[in-house]
Amino acid sequence: MKVSIIGSGYVGSVSAACFAELGHEVICIDIDEEKVKLINSGRAPIWEEGLDGLLEKHSQKTLIATSDYDYAVQNSDASFICVGTPSGEDGSIDLSIVKAASESLGRAIAKKEHYHVVVVKSTVVPETTEKVVLSTVEEYSGKKAGRDFGVAMNPEFLREGKAVYDFMHPDKIVVGAIDERSGFVVSELYRGVDCPVTHTDPRTAEMIKYVNNSFLATKISFANEIGNICKQLGIDTYEVMDAVGTDFRVERSFLNCGAGFGGSCFPKDVKALIGKANGIGYRPHLLESVVGVNDRQPLKMVELLQDRLGELGNRRIAVLGLAFKNDTDDIRESRSIPVIAELLRQGADIAAYDPMAAENMKKVFPDITYCKTSSEALEEAEGCLIMTEWDEFGKLDKEFGAMAGKTVIDGRKMIDPKKLSTDIDYEGICW
Image 1 (cartoon, one colour):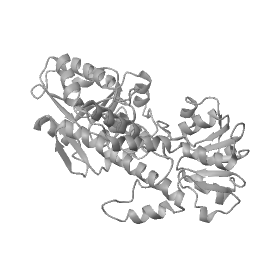
Image 2 (tube, rainbow, N blue to C red):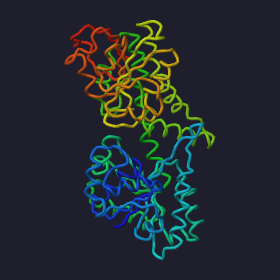
Image 3 (cartoon, rainbow, N blue to C red):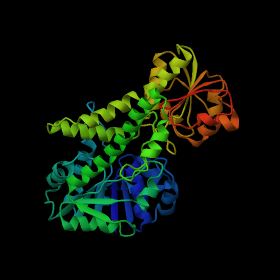
Image 4 (cartoon, one colour):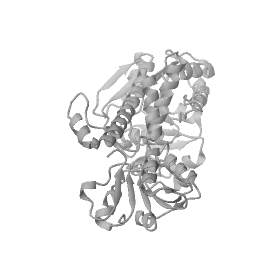
């Protein structure tokens, strides 16, 4: 089939490359000419494992990029909206980019004689596909949904750093369509993927995405709350979670205690669902608590460091890990951001290191010291905060001894305190 993808960010570029790998002809649409040039040259506009290889393989063959909506719509059967949905100041979802994409799609569909399916892949709150996208396309195309064009919602469930793998090996595919014809077109795009398709309506598909992410975020905040209690009682919270996780009703994943969750999805999606609930007159106390625990958790790292070192003013502190998770350069909602901000407020001298995310963090904190290696960051530091689960951080004690003599606060349990090989003043955030 022929597919156009609106937006070449994280979801859009991965979807485009993977649809091409599945044998479809793909056109990327982006108003950013630099991203268009990158994709047409076979390079990815973001870092994601395996993405560059797919773009290099398919670019200028079955995958091209353009800023021309008319060309893309005329030469495709379905258009996927994969644009950003940032949070507003109150945490509610900002749909302005989705609406702008829908307007452009409507104008292009107005000029097309044949049936076209509009598919929302951006994460949007329930009712958005029908009340915003469908109505906007109808308004700007002068055509009728369900007769002249189709509409569907097809949420993504991709882990950053593993998005290409997850797209090609999903545990679920959800298609929420306004009618059978729309659903059939979207389902056919996944014919080459070994996974059953859940068929439903758009607002249910939208809700599935939010519930999926909110539940995982809830597990993390729950684990951190329990971890904070266990620490006060001298109990190994990981031993607790290992045992609790053997219960098939609970399952072990996302029960690791630490500095909290970040990234482009969990914080934004939980807040958006809270905003939607408040908008319909329901206060979601549990979800509010999930966000509250997560907001407070990283600051415990600084509190523990203060307990060990005292005043932090003019003291050199190494911050290891700037990305919100390992295997990505994404710093969105990274737990390092509030930690660095608090250290700066207290006058600390910060030496930061991350194998991939330093350039992105420089846009947020341009005046701290960025080091080329973790050993360099630790060289003259009195204290160290481990914020991201990069494998190399777990080897600093045993292989390099770089942490010897330092006060180390571990936010990700990268170091086993029972196996310390050098003189380290070590403490875990929840253990």
